[in-house]
Structures are given as structure tokens and as C-alpha cells.
Length: 167
Image 1 (cartoon, one colour):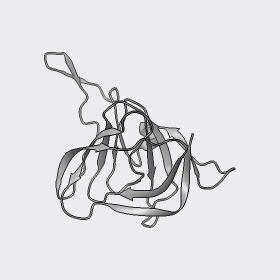
Image 2 (cartoon, rainbow, N blue to C red):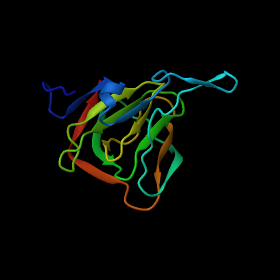
Image 3 (cartoon, rainbow, N blue to C red):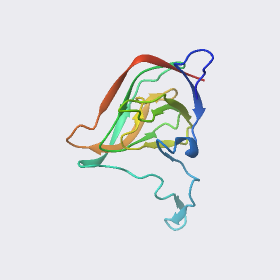
Image 4 (cartoon, rainbow, N blue to C red):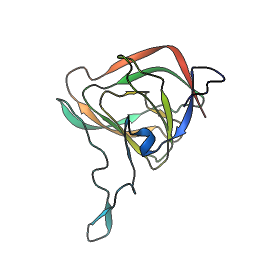
């Protein structure tokens, strides 16, 4: 969503939902599928909430410690990963900013920005343009599930003019 009255380079933040995020990836949260009871009925398992994509290499689990950002946020660069998806799981259950864009001729199109709630994790599809990890509250610690291995799995695009991401 853009604010066309002030500037073409302003992106307004939206609430994250499965429908709005579907072109870019999956939301991971309890309650989106019916759970299966396990462990003598004392544990609910919400199965297969997102698919991990990995071309070559292997799937790995890492921890990322990102600096907290403030709003409004200036977006100057977007990146994508052509060989695998990336799943971001906030370790401290804090809100964070998610910025994504469709591909337009090998470059990111006009971005969309979302606020992920404290109970939402995201899985960004392979080859989807996205901003860097952008926590706005909490510690900035995330578990990340993504492709580990040889080959070029990072493409960065520095924007000619920054976007201002705001509420």
C-alpha cells in the first residue's frame, strides 16, 4: 500500500495475514491448521505449516542477532535467495517488520511492508525480494531456517532512491 499524496517513495505498513503475504511466502502460527495431539495428549502439534525449499546444499538452522530499527524506516537495499527459502522465527516473541516485493524484470517492484505479530513467524519463498531482518521491538534474536552450502544464494539490489516505511 502506498501513500500517493505525499510521495511515491512512501510505503505504509500493513498487518500481516496469510492472504496478503501469500505471493511472497507463508505465515507460521498456531491455529491455522487443526492440531494433532501427541505426547499422551499433552501436546498439540501443528504440522506442515510451511515448506522449506533448498536447491543443492542442505537445510540449516542458524541464529541471527539483528539490530533494532525504528519507524519510520528507510529502505535502501533488498535481497533475494535464488537457491532456497528463508524462515524467520523470533526468539523473544516480539513484533518485527517484514518488507517484500515482487520481481519486475530482475529488480524488486514497489515494496510492501507488514508488521508481524509476536506469535507469527514467516517463511519467504525462494527468489523473493525482501528487506533485511528488521526487528522493531525485543532483542532482535531470530532462529533462521535456510539453505546452507556452496553456490551463489544471495542477490542484493541497492535502490536508486530509498523508500520510507511508516505506519
